[in-house]
Image 1 (tube, rainbow, N blue to C red):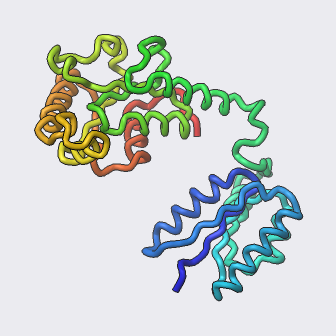
Image 2 (tube, helix red, strand yellow):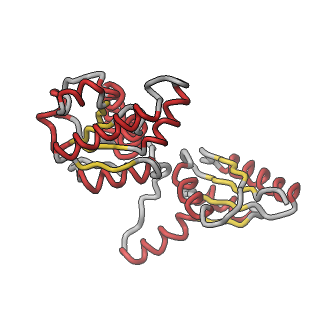
Length: 273
């Protein structure tokens, strides 16, 4: 049997619908065919979406699953009236009971990123992304006092993707610095980081996994060799212990798990959701 088709319908980007829907679908040991329908912000587009969903159901011989975060009532009515899929209206499921509980009507704002030109949070997020890109891999030493967190670790331990995730998802200014042989010879952190120790968080990784990752980039090099990886990881962890830096292993953790742990430990004042 073909993988079930799952539609994610939103009048905005669809990020909320897909994130929530995927969290639910992850509970089932099967593969799904994902179909994204963002920016369904008119009745005409809603009718087109209904036709696509119903056609998919006819071709596949089973009801598609439909996650929606539509808030425009006219658009939503078209979906409710015509859609022959299994409809999971997330805002209807959660917002309406909350309105009753709180005694307040929701603003029915369409899309998380609506009217971004007036959103300070959005501009702060863009600024954080630019900061993290500029301070990637120790490229820039200036303005570190503005950083919310500074990640350190050996090359390819996950610093860059974690920094960008923190910036894009939480609006945090995240710098990252590689720990290199010169640092291990001095047996101390890079000098530029010493005044900011409270903001530093360390990432480490199992040498075997590090060697695999580095070999994808530089096969059969000393940089990727297992003995070199073991030496670098051992020196880096020893340095973190001496410096009293909080750290974790990224070996078996997702970027989301790493970022969540960092947020719990660093607890920055400026945090965007």
